[in-house]
Length: 319
Image (cartoon, rainbow, N blue to C red; front, side, top):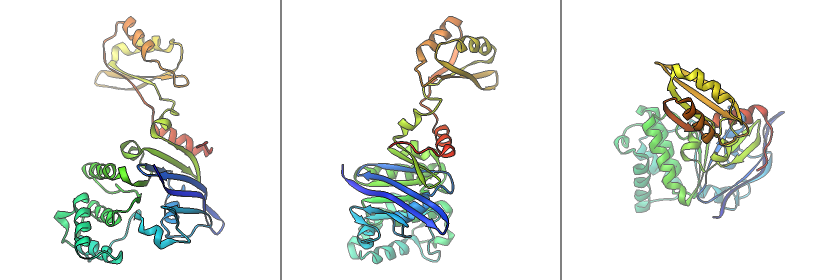
């Protein structure tokens, strides 16, 4: 793989406010990076600096080797950007807007027809192609914005909340599209929706208060969760109390939590100490208790727990 994006100690200050402080990471071909953080963490500001919309107060950002400040035109030729809440020309149609965007990029004739057609097909806009954008639903407007970002088939995509306003089916289609495009591109998805990371990302960078606090694969982040290797057991509620007592005495068990009781069915969550593998001893305890369970599974870990710990603690982690 080759490096396509580099942020090196990127910083932004608005007067006395330090919005971004020394954000650094690299992105290579084939990677889909989830850029995560709570509201106000500096995600959108970082994306705006990377895409050349606002200048950094310090540090550098490069796209395909081109510095976004010193060589902005070259950098933007290789970049597709979908801002959060991207404004659109409401009185234009998607067809007219895409043709206009192509012309602004110097794309004309058959090449324009080919690229517009590909963007329309990928974002499934055919049914609204000739309707005024102002009459479209929020989901369709978001897809029009996405179509303008991928129109020129750029090697680098920066997508700020790409599934915002989409229904579950539309989210699935956008995620499928991102997966299809990822093989020969570098894609950054700025989001606060953790399910996006599980769905499409190969890596995640988490920031809090303008600083990077984690840079790891999603599965690596899950292993930091206290629920990594936790065993979830679903069984008859009447049998749960006795089994719970037996489970608490297993070596390596940190806690046994009752996740809920619904319609006579209880769920026990056996939480390990230091992520130990408890599947075998828990299974043996169930067998000895002679309990019939409806389901028993081992959890990978909860990203939301790790996210809260990282962003509330604000402790920078080694990359």
